[in-house]
Length: 179
Image 1: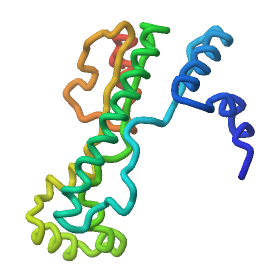
Image 2: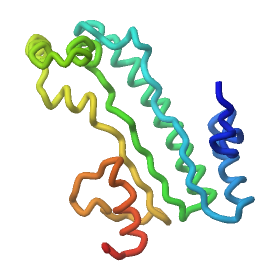
Image 3: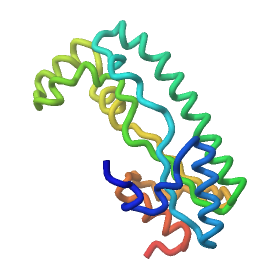
Image 4: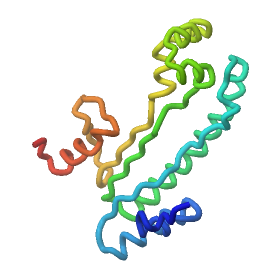
């Protein structure tokens, strides 16, 4: 395995427990005397692959396990936000997910891998799923932004926000200049 410190000398510092990683980020920022852009991966873990259901019964068994992971992930995120705000109330905090809960992924593995749109539609019909339910399952993600000082503002200007255009509205908000 490649030495990750070759990519970034700071990566070696971010090890250990979640509180230790946050402490390291704060210390590094203080040492450098300037703000940092820190990205930490966390939140709800994935359920084990065998839990991605293929039947309505297995889906019902999966739900409580997933809820437990969400509760645990929420507690970690709350701790993270509270810790950052306590250390630096003017920080910008962005929480963003990479995919939805993927409730139905076990049903659609084969049609997704082969591009079988008709098979995908047949499975949806057999399980009484709507296109919206399946789409939400894959693509609804958490996006939460805390602005400096906890300022409340709709920075989306009524438009959808996505990973690719995330920073533009933040910069507009900070400068109060849409240009």
